[in-house]
Every structure is written in structure tokens, then in C-alpha cells.
Length: 109
Image (tube, rainbow, N blue to C red; front, side, top):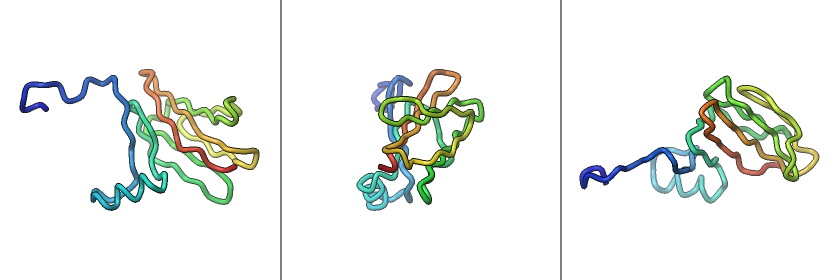
């Protein structure tokens, strides 16, 4: 696009971040297994789910992380959160100071 004089990224779009080797097959497998998160610019350095606990850390320590269950915020943290998912399907919504967001996949249930 850029070679044709078009703007490749305007900053108002979303994307997915995938935890995979930079190979087509690995990326496709990660997407099929839900090993990714959606973002409009926020970078997460950790997304883990072990022993019923969802742990998320943002690259920006000032980012607000909200644990969401059944559409309601049940916990808030700055920079990182760890939260048990025993009460149902849980995800984390992250917002940085610039108003950009990231959303994890749903965990638990």
C-alpha cells in the first residue's frame, strides 16, 4: 500500500496479537486455538490461565485492567491483574492513557 502512496495504518483500526512463531502454520494454529487478543494499540506482555486463575499484564504499567464477568466489571487493577475465574466466563479489558483498548479471549466457565 505504501508503495502506491496509500496510508498503510491510520491508527484507528484494530488488530489481533497472536502468540506464535512468525510462520503461517503457527499463526493459523494459534488463531484456531484462541491464543490471541484483540487490540487497538495496547500491548499485553502476559496473558495466562493456570489452575483457574487468569493473569494479564500490560506493557504500560499505568494501564487500567478491568476483569469482566457476565458483562459487569468485578475487579480493577493497574498494570496487571490475577483473578480466579471460578464464577463463570471471565475476560480482561485493558485501557491505556491514550484511550486505546485490548480485550482478552474469554476464560473459564
